[in-house]
Length: 213
Image 1 (tube, rainbow, N blue to C red):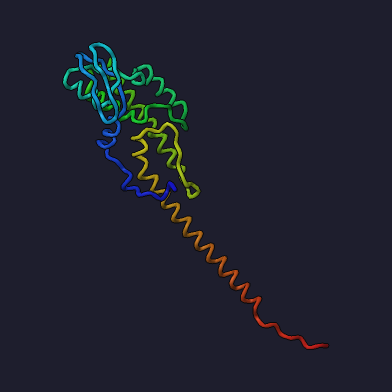
Image 2 (image 1 turned 90 degrees about the horizontal axis):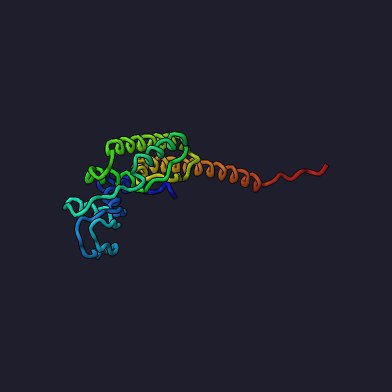
């Protein structure tokens, strides 16, 4: 049940979330020729100059730091796309627009390590911050609707970082509701049991024999 987990153990730090996001794939444009790289998660390459190739985010950043490639910005990180997402987020107060599950971690790592590969990088960063703020306002509004009737929470298109931020509070709230409902159920069951016992006992009392008239 959603309300019966260990809240403390479910919470990840931001560096841990970024570590998980580094397995997402991105496109890079190599500057050098290299043979294919064989990794546990798969084979990537071969690499040829000026020919785009998909690699894990961590590998792309490693090659970028060694000046062996430049990052090809994801389509969803263009100014036009982010501006549209922001407008849609504001117009739909109860819905989340589709973005990569690790969009927060991916965008942060790319802008920290390959800012020069993005046109209008300041605008891109500003739009991303606005999107995160609008989406988090929706999350907080949704959390305020939790009640004793809530046994699980299902949200569509929520990102990994957003889930991680709300997980601790949500799980604790559901645990409290579950405990409160369980105590009330035990009390109610106990009262019903006492009532049935009293009724049953009265039925088994000896009856007085009436004298004939």
